Structures are given as structure tokens and as C-alpha cells.
Image (tube, rainbow, N blue to C red; front, side):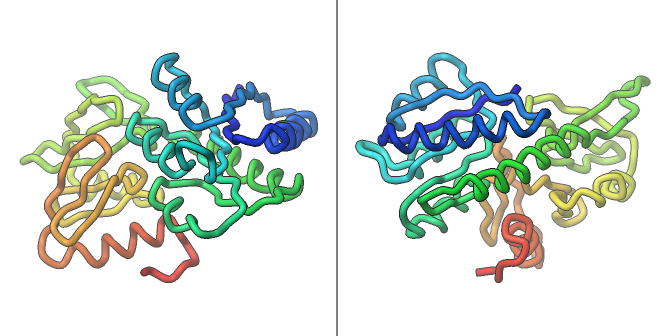
Length: 245
């Protein structure tokens, strides 16, 4: 079951998007949707904030009264929501802003069934692939299954490497940093930062010439020469075929 939030100030647009999603659900046996509709951004944010509503997908207009969809997305991310955001809008003006809130897609209206079907195919495939990505690690004498997506970063501390997870847990591993990176190297979201860190680009909040800040608040200071290659990896990860700005 996937929770889907539709947010648009125009009822006709909500009707159209919901109809397309229901058609998708009927034609894809693996897709089961619970769809909630919101007529403005504040309604959606209030539901997330007060009702512990955690949608897997947020399909949202950008131009809405009171609060833009981009602003709503920023608040969702600040609350820790990692759902797939799909912006549905009449203009390409905010495409770069959409990148800043890690939007999965930016679609210009009118939205066709073929267009949205293609997007849902890709995003559902990404989610299912992520659910299959686990490491088996020996931790304190037992075998522990750890979801790759939950790894925020790994830090070398003497002979022990510390793995930090998105839920706040920390594991100490008696393996070398090279061995850990070898396990993670097949996942393109991981990047070395100097000799002491491996970071998950999915959990990077911001990056500048001095430091990279992770979404759990950890600031990792960059050694000399580390910024440019990390910057290129970061931009390349989010826009594979785009030129780095």
C-alpha cells in the first residue's frame, strides 16, 4: 500500500490526477494506492504535522494561494518527510528550486495519462529496488541486516568504523574503511570524503567548499582537494546527464 497526497487548489486538477492514478492502479496489479486530497498546502502540512501522516508520494501544484508548492516541499523536508515529490505546474520557472527540495519529477500541465504512468513506473521501480538493498553485517557477535538507504555516513575512529543510521542508531564495525567502501561501492549514492568518511548522497543536506552537512545535522569538514570531486559526484547523482553548474 502506497500513501499518495494530491495537493492542488483547483478541484478539476485534483479530479484529473486522481482519475489517472486510479487507472494506473487498475492496470498494475502491484500498485495499491490510498489517495488523500488537499486543496491547499497548509492542509497537507497540518495533516503531516498533527496526524503523523507520511505519504510515499506527494503530487503537488506549485502555484497555490497562501503558500507555493516549493515552500510546502521545503517544510515537508524539514519535518523529515522523504516521500517522492512530483510537481505538477503550468510553468518551468521553478524547475531549479525543485532540485533543491529533491523533487523526483517536475511535470508541466496539462498532464497526460501516458506521462504520469511513465513517472509512476520509474518511481515505483526505484522504491522497490531500494527495499531490496540491504547489507548483512556482523555486529556485536550477531548478523544484522541494515538497509542501505538508512546509512547516513560512516566514520573512521581508530580501528573501529562507525556506521550512523537515519533512525539515530550507531554501529561499530571491526573492519577497515576500504572493506566497508568495497561493500558500498556498487551503490552509486555512496562517496568517499577523504580517508575518514563515506557519505550517502541521499542524506546530504548541503555542501560548500568547507563542509558537507548531512540531514541528521552532522557537519563533515572537507579536507583539501575533496570539495570539487564530491561536488561533481553530488550533482551527477541527482542529474545524471546534466552539465554540472
